[in-house]
Length: 246
Image (tube, rainbow, N blue to C red; front, side, top):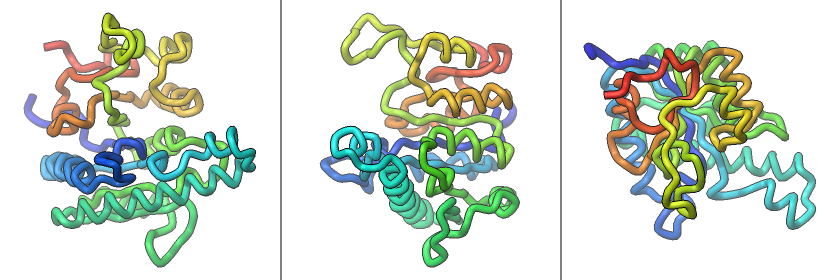
């Protein structure tokens, strides 16, 4: 292949992906992710990021166990994503990568307000854009935020970085015989109830023919491998768009 398969992508990180060594935000992990993002940016790929907040706050648990109002719990989760976005911004800029944080909840001292045309312009100028604050509304997950922002800025794929190397037929930690599924159609994911993204996000991706690639974040260099079209992880989308098996 003469160049990257994808030229504008959205990287979806869970909040839990940033945690490690007993820390809510492990600097060694944010540094590893940032090095990988810097690699693909140097390849000329525009990168946007959506990060969750589950390492700091999980609103559903507060609602279920403490009876907290769902909207309040969700707004607290949105604020947690801003903390994670700032941590990623710091790690990227220490590598010399120009970065902008845009928040759906306005907080002018630390982030730009989310403006689609401004975000697109940042990407065109080679800046990494980190979207924080979810959609700005309760009852929507950061999966839905990732799908929405990816469509809005014209991303060619969502890279869902996780702690496993794809989608399996069963939980590989409890079922040693589980096998990795290489490709899935959107409808297969919905019909089988597989854990990829929530149904709202998945439907939005399906309606806009936006592929989702689920892969292991822990192996350094994987972001670049996916960008260049290597067949790793699980591809969710239209089968004819999937990378060729080597």
